[in-house]
Figure 1 (tube, rainbow, N blue to C red):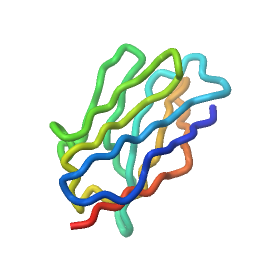
Figure 2: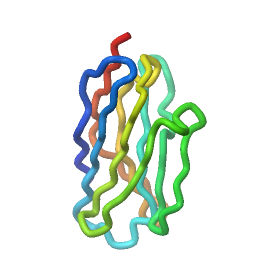
Figure 3: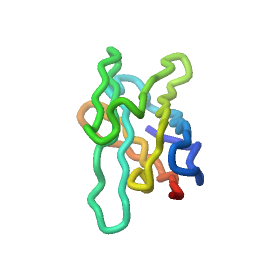
Figure 4: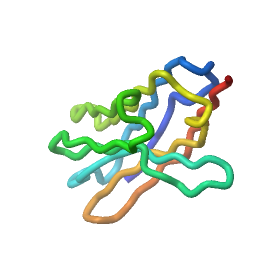
Amino acid sequence: VQLQASGGGLVQAGGSLRLSCAASGSIFRINAMGWYRQAPGNQRELVAAITNGGITNYADSVKGRFTISRDGAKNTVYLQMNSLKPEDAAVYYCNADRYGMQYWGKGTQVTVSS
């Protein structure tokens, strides 16, 4: 499974960004996809995830501000990030779970200026 993420960048606090992650390769039986983030000095943490059945899970810190969605036909998952805060700044990583194995894309930097 290969994951290609895009959409990071610099935004002012209160602004919005949308991240995209396209899966390719052995995508059969990908159970869930999601986004993690890692800020300097911090552990990588789950931001949001979505299963094949459309069940979503969010970190408490982003609930009500971020929305994860998927386009099955395009094998792509999106993360709409609104009302961004400086503490949302991090490298965001796309993740796929297939048969219990974890696959990671290259990170995309999100910078939020105050």
